[in-house]
Image 1 (cartoon, rainbow, N blue to C red):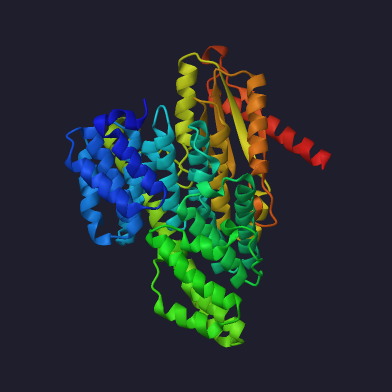
Image 2: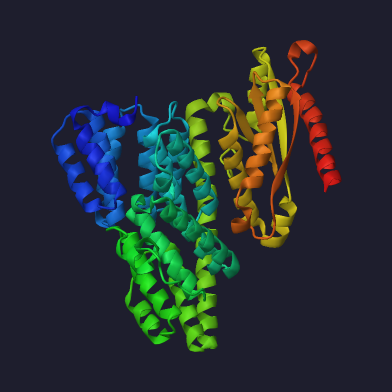
Length: 519
């Protein structure tokens, strides 16, 4: 049963609110949701109406109403045992908290949102939208690796639920990733991501599905075109309205993010046309949210305008300022985010099972996967129940080159992406953990070596197919996997995990040696 099947006689009104939201008509959606809330006593309908209203308020940037809207929504959801509802609410509350400058509260909501959505037993289209909104929140906060992993989950659930591919195209997430690369000095990487974005748009246009793009997606595609132009790539005369950046930006809906992109987009077009004075004048008068495209985007466009005018000293000063803004924002958010995860995990584990776990954290704070301690307990439970299982050790190929060429921050993003990729291709009921460093471990309960081999091929193929060039240019990432059966305690194994891990590690080394021999 889907979430909307529980909301009684208000189902059509709530579906209409969602449709309006998907088409970036948030002001209308807000009114519909408020009417539902006022005219029903059904607890599920009231909770969903308040969730839709909160989402609309965030889109409209009505910050003065955030606190009350968040409180009302959580009050309505408190007694409803629905992981989807709580996960989606936490995703939205995280964005509201960030807009209000409450970063500690923001990261707590992010942790709770991911946990709740991950606990949904039978994910459906509503759960897909929850992961989509969580991905958008990660993206606004500049956690691009987390955002892309959450988006992968949203897309997978969306495909299974029959949601059209273009609905979850989410170009804004990749757009923010692209401009972040440019803010940190990697303009070539930025251009590659923007090029890939526009390739997707052209594909949708050729397939005749571009008309179904969400308005917010149109704004992002439009800005991608003009941002490339500001970096020196000429804008080709559009063959179709759907490829015209002016049309795309003008039809981006009523959200505050779309408005920001329209204003910044006009400055980009002026830069591309060599009208630097006009571009700088526009940039002096506009006020955009830092979350739209990162706190450094305004300064970076000023730098491009000065450079186009030939004032290279001013361009250099603006670039240095943009870099400081980008670095300061990323480092501060990352520190708070990791601290928030650790604090949240410790709090939940202590409250839920203090005497059993004695305050031990069982989750890896970087990837959100179970850690080595939790892996050991899981395997001990499987062996204790006398169940059959296979363990697989996954070691990244090329990871040292990532850290050497791009630094530990990019290495962390790669580990987060790999965690999402492995999770995506596993079977239902399989267990995935981060063992340490660039090593991941999978446990396949009830499987034999033949099934393990197929899982290993899926993992290797999925990692190879990932777009590493846009994340860490010039440093491809692969994975080698070794499998072994977990011995039962009855077979005389005092340390089942250690014994299986040793065998799997040998197979892993053999796989790496064979790969080198082929090369």
